[in-house]
Image 1 (cartoon, rainbow, N blue to C red):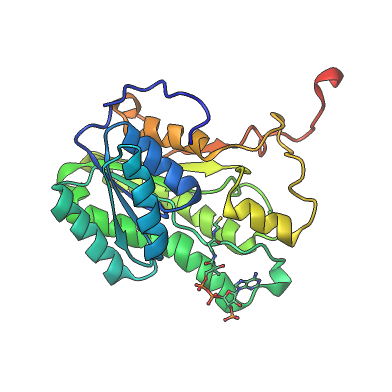
Image 2 (cartoon, rainbow, N blue to C red):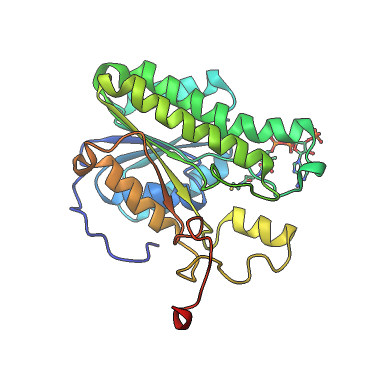
Length: 268
Ligand code: COA
């Protein structure tokens, strides 16, 4: 369910195919919903078949042309099979959204080497695997748009998120490299860095790990975002209106990572 009505033409992505990893739940599902509502054929990819099947049913009931492929983004061969299947079934692959991510909030002293590796493998290596497979299967010859879902952590130290911050900073770097190396192929690559998002697995896990930490939004706008806030930016980045926007990491966080001195309205 989106929060505000769309201001985009409902057919702005008509005829295009979008692959969305992590598309069965949370922000990824909202991205599928919004891109699909604007004409794109959606291919969701993630690890859990049951979640994928339920999400596809839900979006089809809303009129979205949606299908899915099962893969763990850490498994390059499985990823390649899903990407190639998307191209075969849809006849093209215009949009790749890398949303699949793992997270468990924990202080660095309690993150094992394998735990650190698991997050880097899912978030960073997984983004590389999917992006490379899409480049080889379609983007190199036809151009297209890559949208990576990152986090607003690159310039900060983030307690309980050593692994995620490191991995997502790598995603930001990868985004810029893709934009630079693949711009000549007609490929644009951008990242979106969501702040605290209402109703997400990430927010729930953080609230469990650090009780009270998520009771009140701490950004200047004083609210949690919604998946559709991210999805609308993803949609914009996929439209021709964004044809000159590439290599950027754009925060959707209510200025939560911008402010240094936070004052209330009456104090300013
Ligand atoms: N605290 C500390 N370590 C943890 C942990 C926690 N809460 N959860 C997992 N780990 C560690 C495990 O102990 C293991 O390390 P070890 O072998 O040294 O014991 C390592 O992480 C891998 O765990 P495993 O469960 O085998 O990994 P997985 O690849 O199956 O799962 C995760 C991936 C870890 C990301 C899992 O938490 C997950 O699937 N999360 C759901 C998706 C999600 O996080 N969504 C929110 C995105 S913002």
